[in-house]
Image (cartoon, rainbow, N blue to C red; front, side, top):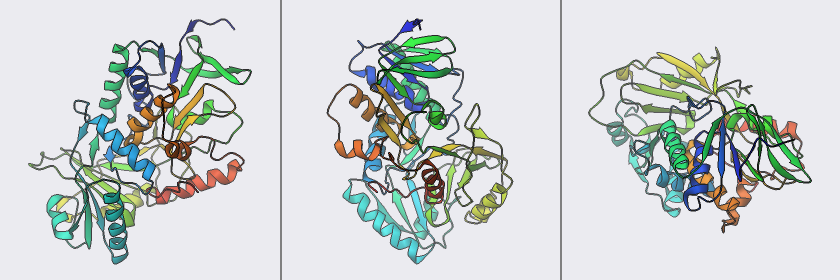
Length: 394
């Protein structure tokens, strides 16, 4: 197979993760030739373009994900228009919910995150359109905020291109390997010879990963809605989560948004974008969620959509080298919350820099080796209703 062109590193996927990888790989060493292959450069068809909530809640039960989120926020703050420090609220509606918030408060502080347990009344004052004043309590994270994934990805892509990255529009049809190592990628525009290939294709990751270990990355359906447009408020509300009810809401400025995980997990087969067909049962899901919102807000669905994203059996991303094929790496099931931190970590690994062994173990793509793929897929779906819980090290 004659090579049409050559590159040192090929990144498959030009969303927020792939673009960030190109940016970090070239930030301190622009001698390498880095090629990003994206099938549509006119927009973001993957999760980058269909992540409208944009929540970046840095605290996670997983210490590794907390660290990656903090690192990501540090990078997003460098992007003009990329991040808005509105803060985040987690609202408890019961005594049991309050006890969980107390644990999260102490654990967050131990990890260096600023957090404060506040009254229901204060939470309602901070987000009067999204929080009632008859709840039990709330946990406030002042350094959290909302990200604009397309803006961030475009910034990383532009900066990478300025440092010499080649960004091409093409479809990758096959990853080529021989003698235990990767040697390039076949695209709709020809073959690219490369000794390092990174799969950053999000919900399509399994399509190019038919190798010798299980990849339990399951795309799932998820409902989100926009309300009617209104005049912009004179204040910025924190984004809001209701953990006990698996509901979250956000003030987008001229309209409100709301989503919910309170429904039966539904696997999806993504086609050309991370936008799926609406599921009729999602109407009931949103109706239940809307009961948490103050009646005065008059929040009703104007636009509803199914945003597809990936689940894993432990709610952790797969980031690292794929065993059995030297030079082949993956960064999949990565939320916007952790995208920049994960990309920076993987770029350090690829460049041979010192990396944190704890992070490497938690994200290791081979951690499910030896497990039955059927049971792993069931576990991934089961995790959907406990999306903010992780099983690091299990």
